[in-house]
Image (cartoon, rainbow, N blue to C red; front, side, top):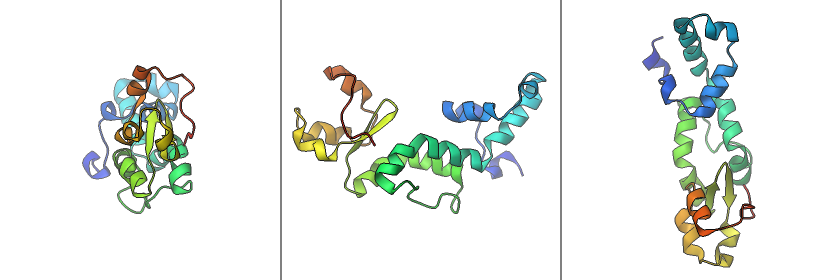
Length: 154
């Protein structure tokens, strides 16, 4: 099966957490034995669907627990595969949260469901609503919030 039909992407296009996990599956001797064999090995590991399922569950566990009862909202493996689902979910989780009536934003590596805090936010609910589905770390830090972050971590 060629790379295109396998759905593989360039190793340079992989998220940092995916590339780290892929490299961790390779023996050091395989990585230093030669560039071509190492690249071939890395590519084969990068196409392993179970790796992508593990990455997905590790990255989004808090969000899945808070919004989807701990499970992905769609049957990823039955559709296009876990790698495709990993990237699609990264783009679609804000809309999925909104469909369920939640206002969720990201601060650093944490996701916060701020739905119940909207009316109590000193700046008004529109600031949180506008930040829903985004990484609001920069805006949060710019306003001078404490490093403890908001309550309601997802």
